[in-house]
Length: 151
Image 1 (cartoon, one colour):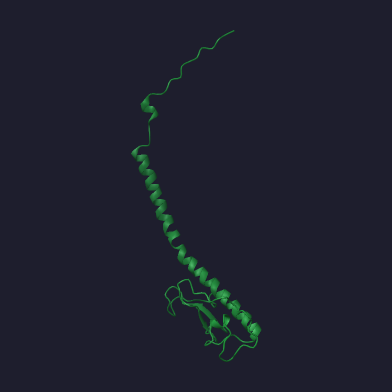
Image 2: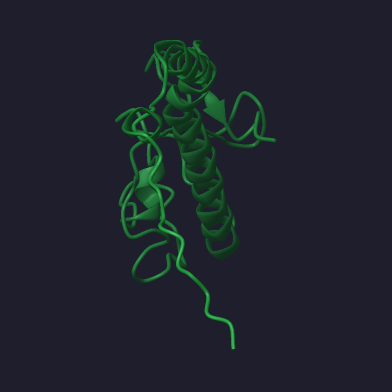
């Protein structure tokens, strides 16, 4: 029967065990991260404005749908003077809607993502009615988001 003789395990010299990254390797990684950040950060920073536009488009569609329901019940859209408030509270000025739905057509009127009220025209300039947000500027004629330019 043969016996195996243990061979002592030798650790490599201390200098070989402690080898780390060189300054050039670290600088290459930092440069790559900087390039990636320069390409990605501008794209991420623009997303909140795109989200506001999408929200405004969704609100305009919802308001237009509520106005269509109002018209189905009452045969006409609210007047410009009655405004979008006619979707929340029964109008008291003529023409008073004969079959206004109890509880209204909306719980409350939303504000656009920039904090402005949505606008309403009957008759509209772009169709039977216009429902729109004044957009980021809050001023007419400067980038409105309306039911006539939704995709």
